[in-house]
Length: 181
Image (tube, rainbow, N blue to C red; front, top):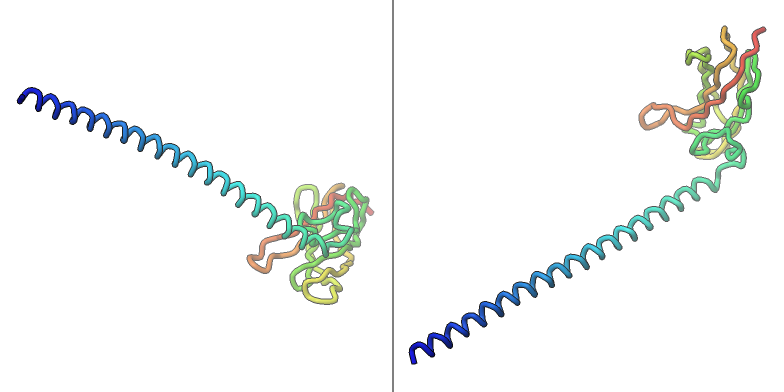
């Protein structure tokens, strides 16, 4: 009888160990399924966040573009569209003084103009105030800039100094040809 009892106890223990092992296997598989679903949910959430960010940026750009004059889309505008150069045009043959004109929405309505030679040397730098009717609005600007150059090519840079850090921002570069007098 002792052997039969021992055999029954051993069989019960074997069944419990196997059942416990199966439970462990089942628990591991279940945790893997939960992890896969969590990863899938995380990716879906990241896609939604990216879509919302893109939509936000699109709306921001629309708000900025709505008040940009048509001239900004003619190719002689800063990337932001806040400074537009209508004179001179690209590759114009210019003499001193050169008329620099356009439209701008700039800090304190101030636009900076620089004439450079083909080596990057600054021939003249000046600034002009736009006739913007109010702060934060576009205004026209026009000024004549005297310069002397011994080269045949150069460029006109029109930009503003950042109110935040003094760096040059919203720059438009117009390549030009100099006519010697």
